[in-house]
Length: 628
Image (cartoon, rainbow, N blue to C red; front, top):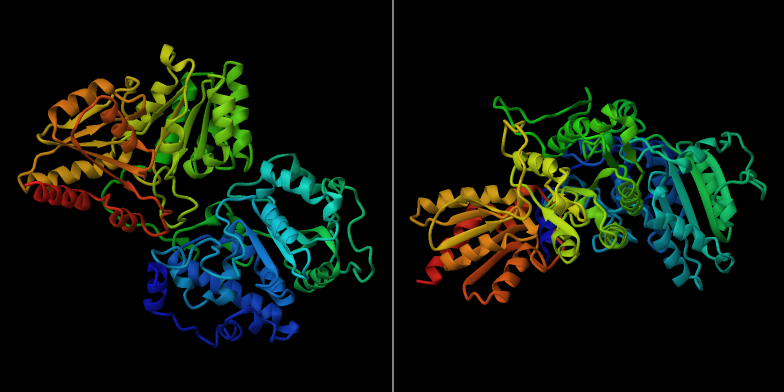
């Protein structure tokens, strides 16, 4: 039994109030939903929406998107034969209702919790999750592949994609392929869930085009064969029949339209218009905040905040955002670029101050990178902020459009390392490994907020070493450790580390925020008469080789610490240095193992992978015992 299975098996179930949830309490699987009279389905929707609000208010999670797809979720599982018919939800933010109706109602309170239900569709979790969708814009490609594989059968394939996700280049590739005449007989229905939002309001020409398309009134007669919109549009230009747009909360109309489309062969697109946060007024009124709130009082709509009487260190994201505004005020060459993460990255602060110098390009990481490259060729200095997990999608552009051309772009990789409840698809575990091999690239990670501030400052200076190199600054999600972080800027020497603690025999070599845990580990070890040194290496590329020579000559045991994958990461770089220079010392690496890390609270995950101060100290004590 896996950790997840064990957790779900032993976790206490929360009994449903059958008076409140008369219908939902009867639905264990979609087969139960089909037993309910169609006239009662609006009541099912009402209960499902309330169940989502109840659960997220107590345990947190993504709220707004799933509230907007309640009617669609009920209609799909009512009309289609899932899991034989396959629904691909793009992204999983909108799939909470789907999870509740497909056997996970009683365990849904474990959603995004350590060992519990994943916050996104996950194939290994349920046969009803046809495809894992943590990142956006993959549904049409995946569903098209499924439909091709099953073209000799009568299986139906449905891709539910939000209009925010439609901005990614992969979607255009998939639509271009799906519209080809060879696929005219496939069973593939694309449902465009148009709510005008990703996390922030949608941008771009496609969004504007969608807004211009006419809506079909609820009274529209769709009993004849020509029940689609006759207006030529983007989708029809790709030979994909277009139907809509219709009110996605008008359940009778939605059921009628889906019933018609179910019988129609070929690739087709249904455009529905929904409201993110539908049915919960505060979520409708402030859709950005209520995309993924903390726990909240569902009656008052007040989001709960951690109560503390002591000043708290800021979030790294806010330090980035405020510092970028400060630097942009001094350096007119600086511009900001982000793929639909203005709020999450705190680049909205730059947008408010310098709107003409801030570019939200939509969910389009590849474009964000090459757009930044174009700006760089003309003398601008782009600060391109992308979450670590999302820049994986633009790796080719970093290689060919940035590094090969020796262009100067500052990549600010937010959410590097473990991110918590979003899980395997969102942990920034691999950036150190896959970027370390690229020429013309500098890679740094700050140990605290002051270091982040100074790295941002240094990255925009007119230094010879920076002219032909991109500069990556990676930093974690959440709060730092320094309250008084707004200090005078100081230049950090490129490729130079620093000693934090002077000790003997054992040396910790750290990169980034985990250096703070290593410092606490040293305090624990000091109480046990063990006195390690601590070095904050700051840079993974270039490595501070002069400092490393000093370290390998002085210490018998070297321990590297990183919040990324061990294969190819920071510890691997130190191991290569040791081998290349023929040092024969004991070197141990602490980091993430060779498997995908599941979701959970940050402290739970750091504990599991031995990256807390206590676990590091215990590791050293065990190491000392085994070598005495």
